[in-house]
Image (cartoon, rainbow, N blue to C red; front, side, top):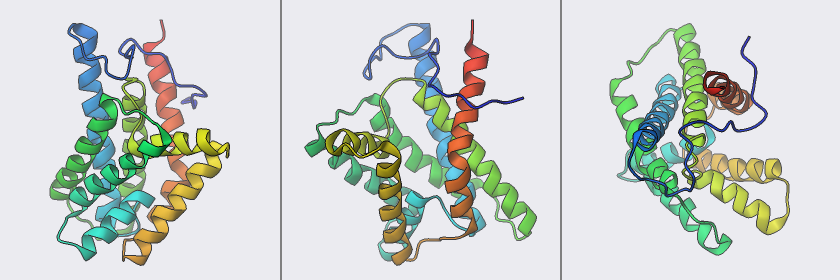
Length: 219
């Protein structure tokens, strides 16, 4: 039985610092796992977009921007990530290598996914895409988090606001997601059952994926 992890496991590839990019077996393994995790994260997001039944909150925003500008969804995701990263400055948050990789790789992976994933009309296949996409985002999150190379822009904004305001992490994250989702919906981003399922299941998907990583790397 797959059990959720309550903590982030310490893996053999975990970095000593967020800019630990030296040479050696574990360094190469860490970089490969980071890029792979971020790639399947982005492809998972693309699966939701292809269904047309609702995106994750931040991709609702990216799609909304793409509908009102010359930018595609991947480019909009990149620009949103840069804007969120800029909000780290007054919060005195420091990015790591993983933070910058997050911005570039996920944006590119979304566009690759949108180019390669076939569209489906069958409602059951659309729901399969949604659940499969949520699963990929969960796995991708677990892999890149365990590299220890820094949080993504959105997670860093969440923790920065938490430490700055004293408001609980869950409430801060909820507030950020609601703002992104609301702006995206006003701009025409796809909001629907896929959005609801993502919000409901992504936490469990990440927790279960971390649990699997923990079991596979346990000595």
